[in-house]
Image 1 (cartoon, rainbow, N blue to C red):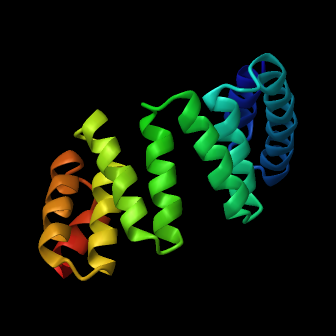
Image 2: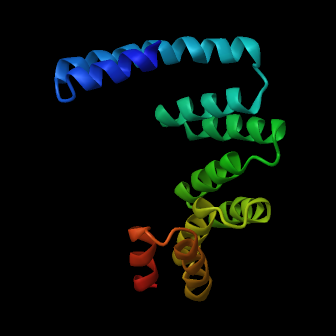
Length: 157
């Protein structure tokens, strides 16, 4: 129902700011209901922990986010999304070795994962390991040849 309303509203008034505002409000309310249902239905699922982690990140609570991501990883140790999220979180906290461990685990599960290749490259750049950064950026470019940021970083490296 919400998708039909969304599509119809955008069709009838694609640039009406009021329509877009109320559409955002509706989506927000609907998502809160779905989030509650997810927590009631599967409170220990990796998706429930993932959503909780993302809500902590939105509040800039990195400790809470890390704890929830770890719970998500425990529930699904082969989740590329969670491994990448933990790698990104560690990288944002300048914990490059920990981030690289998560990115490496991701690459073992999904060798053509762009986020882990690009994230690892950034870690290597911060650690002044240019050769490893170049290798990771070359992989990122091979995975997504249209990634301007990867081409730029590769040129800089």
